Image (cartoon, rainbow, N blue to C red):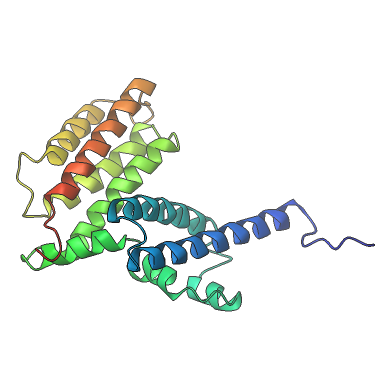
Length: 211
């Protein structure tokens, strides 16, 4: 029996593999959203898993931006019926429902919900970039600068907030280095630790929705 190939060369094979991965991410997000809505998963576990899916989605969709410029159309083409996933990954700006709820609570105290979402995304981007070994000063500095700027927009965070202080210290340290210099393994590990600690403090500082 003749074997029918989906691809003719390595490039086509990679394209189909990426399509398959994108499909899997969207489907997984849909299942996660439904599990959260039905209280089948704790908010903390949901948030952790959702952030992982969002990061993977953003990375893959950036790679496929020319082939898949519209995620909604991709979902329709493959009859995915994943409206909850499309909302979470695209419409919401790539923010977990738990963060979205906290952002709404912050907005009710006259702070911007969009800034909270911006802070979350900047934290995730910074931590993810270190995992991808993006440790050159000209790679790290702009990301930390964006994070610092977004944190400074939130009035609920005081000047002594851990994240603000830590980012200021790191930016000062990096400003004394050359653009092509790279963080050592120890420095990168410490920065990731500081980012993770600051992120947890940031989430704890947000008012709980419904309180």
